[in-house]
Length: 339
Ligand SMILES: NC(=O)c1ccc[n+]([C@@H]2O[C@H](COP(=O)([O-])OP(=O)(O)OC[C@H]3O[C@@H](n4cnc5c(N)ncnc54)[C@H](O)[C@@H]3O)[C@@H](O)[C@H]2O)c1
View (cartoon, rainbow, N blue to C red):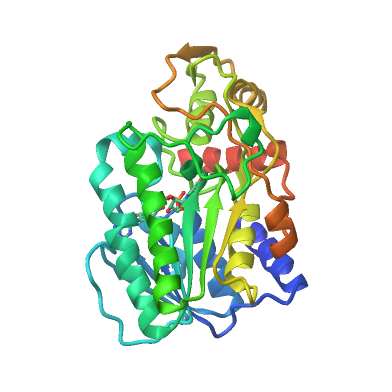
């Protein structure tokens, strides 16, 4: 299933002559959900891939199938500590960071370090090799935008609580973006910032039930346990299937002339959390009841990207509908849970 999606991503890229063949790429956080999909595409397109990860939230099983490939090297390392490479890189993609809300409470310092000390180390590697740099930032840099900024354009500067329960993530990513812009200003690096909106799909951690909403609802529905909706469920998110997100990220990394750009990459179809719960329940044929829990502090009320910039610069828009993407994800979770 993943292989078919990887092939579809490559077909999408090659339609516009975007190829990473023979490019030397460092992917930090490459054993994670998004990072491992990126490694899959790059390896299959013939790039020479170095994947760096400390397995904080990634899994060896995500990259096990790549370990024997000649053009794939794995380095176990915490990117917030210095590392020396004697090989050259053309592209550094910095994805290393825990990203699930339940980790904000348990590992706030690690998250801050990965996006400050970690990005400093990763930018230093890019600077040394004059490599292009792509940063996996997030829609969370926008915090809680007012209705007048929904859909949210890249020009919106954000409404973020610097001392709230999510600040370790939101403010770390804002600092990460500032690091990227500083390296561009001072060292002229070819940098690109992707603001990623909620992405879901195969390889999200099954045990992530207190964190990201899609795996949580799927696990609950498949086990006929109560589906836990926070608040009234009227808050919205826009969900992007992983193959769409990864194609968008690789377009941003691969297209010439985009140095300095900051681009939203996400689905612009807004869905309420209650609609998501009901759809997952239906697709899982589940008898779960939907229950309502208090809304966590600073949980954003609406999330929807303005993707005009991605459409124009990357010739990209999401192709996979929520229902189609959820069906694939549920199938994967069924297999994953029973294997
Ligand atoms: N998935 C989403 O919906 C989403 C949305 C917005 C932004 N992002 C960003 O994309 C990136 C990847 O997210 P993901 O969903 O794949 O999460 P993930 O947790 O599956 O992957 C993150 C990877 O980084 C690794 N890592 C964490 N700290 C590290 C460190 N100090 N040194 C080395 N490796 C480290 C983890 O072990 C893991 O493999 C993150 O930076 C995240 O903030 C993701």
